[in-house]
Image (cartoon, rainbow, N blue to C red):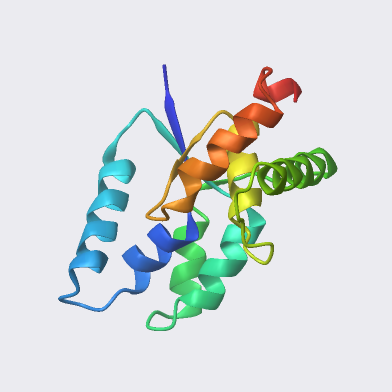
Length: 144
């Protein structure tokens, strides 16, 4: 079975634009390298991730960053994704979880879940979001 990962912004920005000598940059770069060399791994982004990476990378030429991003499958964010994200946000609030309403992490998790991908991220909120998402949409994610 082919593994699949949605590459989160923090991983991509860390790998593409981190400070030389910074251990977090080195970790992000190594993690992305590991994913890239795996022949049976699908790697994906969304337009929102593309936007965040292009906005966040400052040390590399824009054309180089766009070229790097073009290597990945790009899943669109659809109406059903927005509705699932809204239901998940409401469930998180009802359950006492605090999610940043200005963050795109919830959309990233919905895109990963609906496309049967794991999220490759350095963000500690991702597992919490995924747990709430599975409560809201426990059925087959493709038909959710």
